[in-house]
Image 1 (tube, helix red, strand yellow):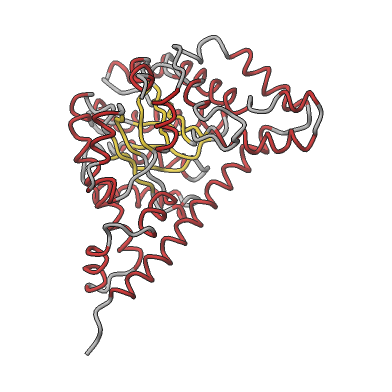
Image 2: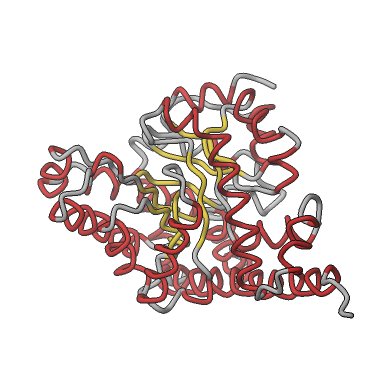
Amino acid sequence: MTDALKRLSDEGVAIWLDDLSRKRITSGNLAELIDQSHVVGVTTNPSIFQKAISQGDGYDQQLSDLAARAVTVEEAIRMITTADVRDAADILRPVFDATGGQDGRVSIEVDPRLAHNTKATTAEAKQLAWLVDRPNALIKIPATEAGIPAITEVIGLGISVNVTLIFSLERYRMVMDAYLAGLEKAKERGLDLSKIHSVASFFVSRVDTEIDKRLDGIGTDEAKSLKGKAALANARLAYEAYEEVFSSDRWAALDKAQANKQRPLWASTGVKDPAYKDTLYVDELVAPNTVNTMPEATLEATGDHGQITGNTIAGTYDQARAEIAAVEKLGISYDEVVQLLEDEGVEKFEASWTDLLKSTEAELQRLAPSKG
């Protein structure tokens, strides 16, 4: 291991692990990553839990108890996933305390089937916060049209939120506006704003996957020269928007009330195209007050050969705008791509949730006590 992970951390990028399983908790692996790899947070999603539970290790006893109680499959999943998040939050609690609540966070997502229902998303977020019952939990709410007002409501109740599935710059601005509106509500209620935290998960690699596919379809030299550029350009312009919003007069009033900035979080940072360097979306997205949540393979690659050379976002905004414009000039619609990616993101999480329901139901039936 090089000291690239330490350099990344020193540059103001919080390193979070994009994975969780009971085995990772009970084996001491998570504690080891915190101790040795500068990991200061954990993110989960329905796909991560579906993989963890379907691979089995460590869940039989709890599943057996749940089967004996004849609980519904939905309740079983909530009991299992919140138990993992609670245990991970306890392991990360020293980091949470040492960073004044900024890091040491573990995220858990609302049921993805509620992504287009504001009221249900809000109710589920409240329920999850109550179930996990840890100050260092973040409740993940998708940045769908229905999710935006839910973010304001939940933040307004003093619950810390990880806004997920952000692909477009316009939607990201709506997310930041929803966060500020939530803080204003919380302030009106007399809540302590210093205790409310949020990150905005801006997805990276999927943008290149979709746009590169279309550039390949065009096939010209000009099109090929733009491959691998759009995702970084999009993320860098998101950071520009973050800098603008969190230096506004509106923010200044909340800042005086001890509010915390909503940090940009780079998600989907595992490289999908083997032609690209496996640390591309880490090395090229270094800036203060950001989070990079990495799959373990990306974390290990960064530790081994990441090239952290200081801030790689400052001064890139004009170039980023030019790269997005060049892609659009070839007939690839930015707005269409980011909406497609949001729709697909919700669908993928719904599919993983359905798979999780099916595999958990099968386990409950297998472990159910025999009658008679």
